[in-house]
Length: 418
Ligand SMILES: *Cc1c(COP(=O)(O)O)cnc(C)c1O
Image (cartoon, rainbow, N blue to C red):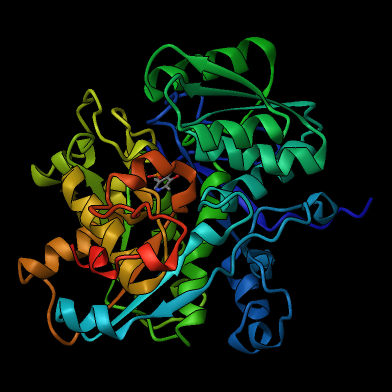
């Protein structure tokens, strides 16, 4: 077994700033507890800056997010599973940019990951950490995507996987879970209830826990979306990145990624990140609006199931990130999300699940309110594929298929115009 030197130097508590050795602690700061005691993963950036250069990346033939291995928390490379994660396509779309009155617009389609969501970036890293810890069983609480993603990677790795989802998780996500071989517990409650139950069970039975903001390594996988944006846009950092927000983990991780690339000298500036929530589950947008550094719990209610989060677990990092980057948290209605699904599909050919289109809904809203200048450049992250939640996505369609008889003589083409 070849063990490389782990590039991680320490795990730092975001509240009390105490630093821990990554060998001595797996989850949160014992003094500050869950949420407040979320840990930040730190590296030897000077060493990484020598290795991770633009030239080295240009020569790198690994077109997955493992191309950033020097800045990922992996000690045992042999535990990386072969599913191709990351390096998802970025599409420029001039038609939509013109319609929105902005200079340049790119859509980054993370629905193209192996289990069809952004969560694969995190699960791919979590499985490596579980194997490094010699775990036999891994667990997660999830609205659906984090779990189905984890189950895809553990199917290859051969780890027992126990999943807690809300009872009403979309059918496609449950189907993925069952076929990937996970044991699935549908909790009679919300995602927030499933989360608490999962963490209690993990502690009771000693399972490795891949739950957001408990496990510090998830964000390390999720930051690679930021690295890819820099590289795929040929180092021209956009003015804004729009992304959907539930727990806030993707958001804070993207910011960490941009900060790290800035820190090692790969980019000269950083973008403003706009985190978009659904109005019916917008505790972070509400906290941001009043300048609070803590979110008030809400009863979530939105058809965008992946961001139906009432207690955002990564709220402390997320609220800190939004201030640091000069961005915003905003909220959009379910109707605005439906319009964004339809625009994305109809104009860019990318079918997004409701949460996957929520970043675009945020851009459409800000553009309409003239909050974006005509010379600004924008990346919208599509975080999940539309086939994940067909019932939800179908609500965005105002059109219907036309049933016809199988005879050319009786085919009335006029019917297509109604
Ligand atoms: C999980 C998820 C999000 C939100 O990510 P958080 O880290 O919870 O903020 C957005 N879109 C999709 C499709 C997701 O699965």
